[in-house]
Amino acid sequence: MALEDRDLEPLWKNIAEILPKLLPRERAEKWTDDDSLDRMREITGELLMILSREDPHVPGEGRARIYSAMAEARLNFTWHEFNGQHPFLRDEGPRYDPALALTCYGLALELFQRKLGEGDRPAVSAAGAGESRH
Image 1 (cartoon, rainbow, N blue to C red):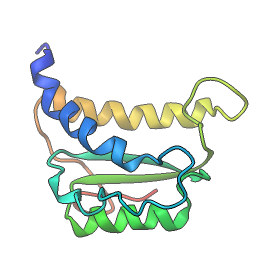
Image 2 (image 1 turned 60 degrees about the horizontal axis):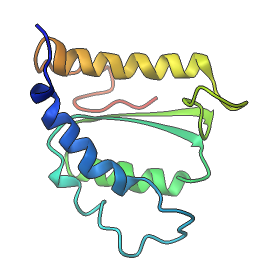
Image 3 (image 1 turned 135 degrees about the vertical axis):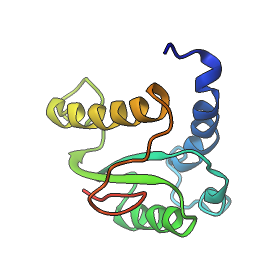
Image 4 (image 1 turned 60 degrees about the vertical axis):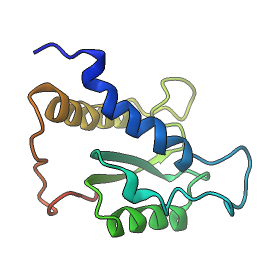
């Protein structure tokens, strides 16, 4: 089954709407006017969250707030935190971790195959319905 642009539109729409709101603003220390955590319930697709415990832009408290908001909104998501430096997926520079990047690419490919390849199949998780923690 070949995927066409129209098949991907709902996925890209969800990503385009929420992702910019989860990313830090340039050098902003407070997000007083950001309502992305309150808008979590608007997300209808499954999310794959890949985060670094060593990322100075999203400290542990911020990751906990995002996780709690997603869980409270009863979103369908998997949550993966790794001990990698901030740009560990970016294939340049000394902080790039190719083994960790490969693991994360595998997670993304599994999600794409399950949701876009053969239809909407449920995630297989040993941690419970809808989410897993690494």
